[in-house]
Length: 253
Length: 346
Image (cartoon, rainbow over all chains, first blue to last red):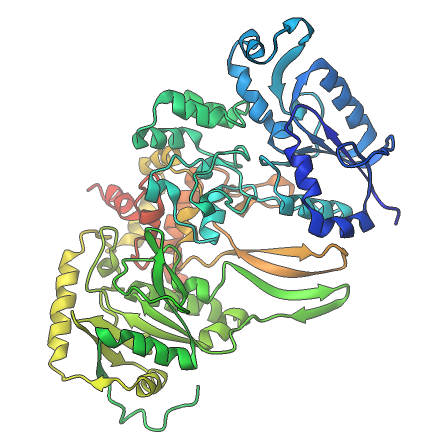
C-alpha cells in the first residue's frame, strides 16, 4: 500500500488545531509510518503539491482569497475534512458576524483600504465537506480515530450526541445543577470527553450543536439561572452562532 | 471465598459501633476490594476505599453501583489480525459494595435478570459472582426518593450479604448469606440484642413517613397504554433537552453500544462496550440514516414506557426502583412521577 498523502491547510484561525496535530507527538512517529504528510506549512519546509488523499482545512473563511484557496484544496483532495470549529461553523471569528463589518475592522486595523474581509463562515458554505472534526481545538483522540478509520475505509465513530453523556460516563459533578453554571453541554456535541465540566468549568459550546439539540429549552434554563439576554446570546454565538440550531437558542428569548 | 463451616449457627444480628466503622472497613479490605460512597464535589460517588473513608450518611451517588458490575467502558476482547483473545477484567479479589441503598440493591437484582436470564452475559456474571453486597437501609430520605411506591425501600428485605441500619451511634448489622457471615466473623462484630430490631423498625417507619414523592403503580400498565397520545408528551418534546443524562444515571438502564478500537498498526485492537442511551437520536438509527425514534417525544416516551410497561412482561418487575437519580440529574426538572400524575389527571 502506498502511503496516503495528507495535506493540512490554514485559513483564518489561531493555528491551535494544527498545533494539536503537532501535539500528537506520542502517535506522530507511528503515524508518519503509515501516512505521508506532504503538505503542512506550519510544520515543514518542503511541501509537495497535490493531489492529496486527505486534506484537513483549519480556519474560517473570511475573505475572497481564502475562498479561492479552499476551492483549490477541494479539487486537490479526495477527502476534505473541516478541522476544528472555525472550519466547521466559523468558530471564534464568526463572533464578528453580528456586528457591523466596518466597526469590527476599525478595532483592529488602522488602514482599512486594504481589508477585504467578509463574514466568517465554515468551509461548507463554499465547498462540499466530507467530515467534520469539531472542537476548539479539535480533540486529538478524535483526530487519530478519524485517521485510522479513514485509512481502513470505515466510517469513523464520532460521538454525535450531547456532552452530558460523556460527563456521566466520567461521573462528573454536574456544573449546571451543583454550581449553577450556564453549561452548554446539553446542546453541544460530545467527543471531547467532557473536558471542561470534568475540571469544574461549564461547557463553552466550542464543539457546536449536537445531533438533536434543544437550544430553546436550554436558553430558558439559562434565563432561570438569572442570565440576561445578552449573556445568553453570547453563549450561543461564541463558536457556532452561524448554525441554525444555536441561532434558535438566540431567538428563544 | 470459601464457605464458612457453620452458617446456621452464626449470629445473624450484630452491632457495629460507629467509632469502629474504620476497623470494620479495614477488616473487609483484607479480603476484598471495598467500594463505598465518598464525597465528590457536592455529590457522592462509589469509589474504591483506599485512603478514603466511606460517608454512609450520603443521600445518593451520581452513578449507581451498577458501574462496578457493568462498567461504563468495558473491553470485551482484543484482536490481532485473525487472533482473538477474550479479556475479562474481572477483579482478582472479591469486591465489596459497602453502604448501597435498598433501591440500588433492587436495581442489581433486575440487572441480574437482564444479564443472566435468557441471554447470559459472562462479563457481568463474573463480576457479580465476585461481588459482596453490604447494603444500608435508609433512615434518612431525600426529596426525590420514591422507593416506597415501588416496594424497593426504604427497607431492604433480601438481596444482601450484610444489611446495615443506622441506629444513631451504632449500626445494626444483619447477616443475609454465608458469605456475609464469614465477613462479620473476620471483622469480629458483637452480637446485638433482639430489641434493637424495634429501634430499627421505628427509624425505618419514620423514614417511610418522610417520603414525599409517590408514583402510584395501580393499573399503571393500562394508564400508559391508554395515554400514548396524551398532550404531556408534546409538552415534554419542547422541554426535554434529550441530553441523555436521565438514562446514564439510571441503575436499571442496561443498553450499551459496541465499538472497535484499532491500534495504529491498523491490524490489532480491541472491542469495547460503552453505555448507551435510548434518549439519544443515534440510538435507534439504522442503515441509510433511517431512525425509528426520530422525534424527541418518541424517545422520552420510550424511556418511560420501557421502565413502566415493557419491563414487566420481560423481567416480572417494573424497571424503576424509585432512586430519584433521573430527577436529580435533569436540568429541566423533568420528573417521572409528575408525568404519571399528569396522565392520571392529578
